[in-house]
Length: 216
Image 1: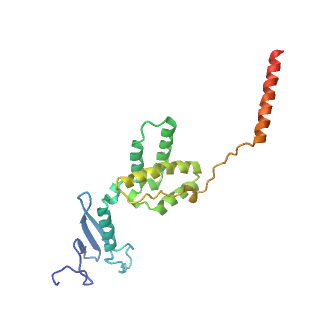
Image 2: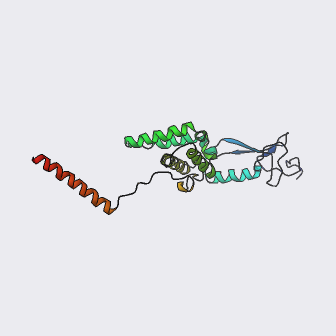
């Protein structure tokens, strides 16, 4: 037991774990692609307190559990280092042979994402709350419901493709849009049967009048 590595609190460190001179813990591992990776935390266990003046974070061993789960699920670490914009562009590369209007809509969505900080966010860092807050922000910035609907109509399948590619575990855009942003679209009401008959009678009279004028 005396030969085992221990931290400053005399706790035994597991394989891959270490503690630096400044007290910060590190865990070294090999990811699903065979690359060596490191994660860090000021806490070894969940019950540890974060040192004063240091940024709070989950403990090293909590991170280890997440890492092992991703490795078991063959999830590519860090979402393959892809941003939201990069993932959307990759998704759209597969949408070939679409109509001109559809392609124009895709370009419209890409241009919106390019202007947003959200577009630079790494896909594995996007949570459900982040996705909702972004769409709310778009509406607060003046985007209409139909525009936001178009944006989500592209981003949601792009993230689903990331799930299918084992880059992320869940799609953060799997929610009902109407529960997040206000549908401010103008609803067009159909005319009633009575209004329809009146309109047809009017058209009939107009055509009859035109016919009479042509016969004179």
